[in-house]
Amino acid sequence: MPHSFEQVLAILDDAFHELESRIVKPAFVRRGNFHVFRYETKSIKAAVIQKLARRQSGLHASLVLLRAGFVQEMGVIFRTLDEFDEDMDFLCIAIRNGIMTDLHKKYLASFYQEEFDKPDNPFLSEQKRPTISRQKIQAAITREDEKPLNPSDSLRLYRMRGQANSGYVHGASIHILEMYGGDPQRYHLCGMCGTPRIEEMIAAYWDYMHRGIDVTALVAASLGEVQLALRLDALRECFRKASGKAECEDIDKLLRNFKEGTR
Image 1 (cartoon, rainbow, N blue to C red):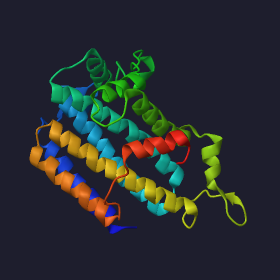
Image 2 (tube, rainbow, N blue to C red; image 1 turned 120 degrees about the vertical axis):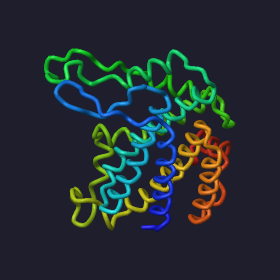
Image 3 (cartoon, one colour; image 1 turned 90 degrees about the vertical axis):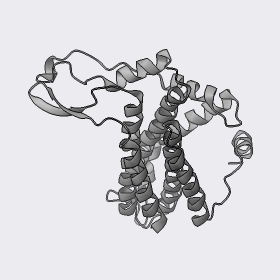
Image 4 (cartoon, helix red, strand yellow; image 1 turned 30 degrees about the vertical axis):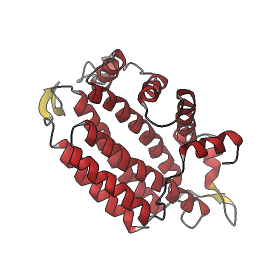
């Protein structure tokens, strides 16, 4: 396992704690017969920090799974990271612009809603968490996106990325059958170390790590932590060079290859 993964994770952990220290801490409050941690001010900044916490935890968890060869379970985590990235991008738009749209307000209301309105008797609770359209979140991002893509192509890329890992979450046959093979042919129930799947997932993990640097830098810049954002930009360049990927693939070329079926 490349040491650069652990090194980058440690730096991103430090960056997270630096960002988290800038906002009000959760309070230990009474809810029903229990005490729990809650943000008393349900702010958009606290929402971003919480999403970033899950994003970073997901990187740690998927690295553990990679070492053990559990590539199916990595796909499940990767699917959550895709949505966390979109959520943070979406929320940071409102922070940077200083404008809370109705969609942002609905998102935060759903995000902070308690799971049960009767915490001491969940069986009798009747409230449901409203569903926030993923397509609307993606559309809001593409309208603000500075990348050289038209909104239609951007939305198709978001959809493609989401579909790539959704089968791991829902247990689709074609994804489960990636566990099958070998000599003798069998289902690999205890991980897939020593199979070609590991190299594939190392490459996928690299991409999610790279995107983790990007989204942490985005959060830092949006929260006004400019120096931290610049340090993370420098980390991204070092990570690329250490991985032999000093240059990112041109987005227009990448999209053209997708459309022509050459990728």
